[in-house]
Amino acid sequence: MELLHSDISSTILKGFYTVANALPFGLDKDFYCNALTIELQQLGLKVEHNKQQEVKYKDQAIGQFTFDLVVNNLLLVQVSTDKGFIETEQIELSKNYLKLTEFEVLLLLNFGLDADHKRVFLSNNYKNR
Image (cartoon, rainbow, N blue to C red; front, side, top):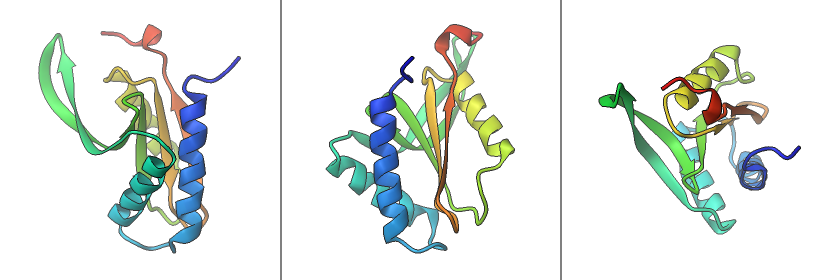
């Protein structure tokens, strides 16, 4: 069984590791987001930076999320610069982003001391709306 948006995910990860190997640890998150945007665009992906997504409850807007990157209008990317590896709390927060939007795939990319990534998936078939 093939993973949803696996082709886009693998291209994003290629770009992520290219940037992670080129830039040193300890920069502001915006440096990594900007460099990743450039890299992904050069790899042929459509990237929106700091994309706002409306959140609704019973068809009424209750607020907005701002996502680091939205790729090909199909996949969310959240960037972190934590020294260690991606924590369970970040994964749980990512699941909430997916629960409250139409997106089904989110990549967590950590430009830490050692580059780290996690893929989070939640099918729209299992979302309560």
